Image (tube, rainbow, N blue to C red; front, side, top):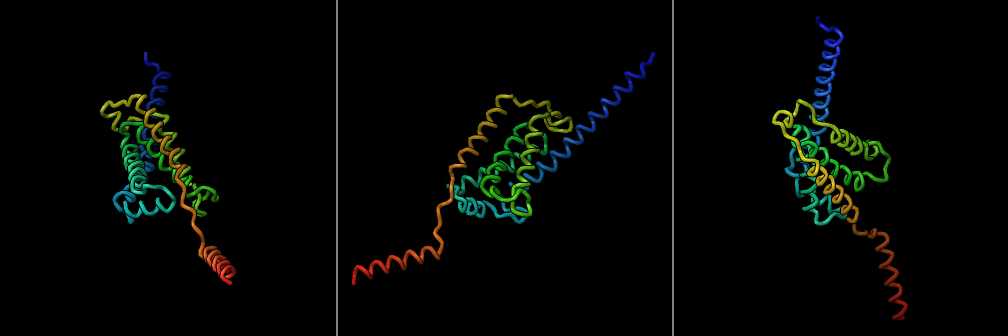
Length: 202
């Protein structure tokens, strides 16, 4: 005899599973795709981006030296992490990798400002970090390359990746811009020095 109650529960479970997979795919493609685009701007100058040289100069202006190494790290974190996230490949390496560049961007470029992006704040990095953490804590869903090829990343590798990202963020905290003396202060100091010299001469 057909158990309608069991059949209904099974159908509901299948529909929930499909909806979950489509939801995860949507988030992965959107966040991962946009993140990969940001990385491509930094590394290759695509999408009207600054390219590696421009990114190097920008990071060095924030005291991050050697700028080229930091530019490569930031670009790779975003591009590789974004691509892996979008494809659902080697999960959770992709979402974890994205967290590093977002954390550094939050601290170096947006910290101390109002949170909203319209005020130059960290709204987007915070949002991307929240999505990255959420994705890292769940599987990529059935609509992913990991599911298609039966790939399962060892937990040890995921932990090592997270540790490497954390160390990179911590190390970036020691990178500070060189203090710059304003033109007005420099002029005052120069004039003060000249006055002192004249007094000694007289």
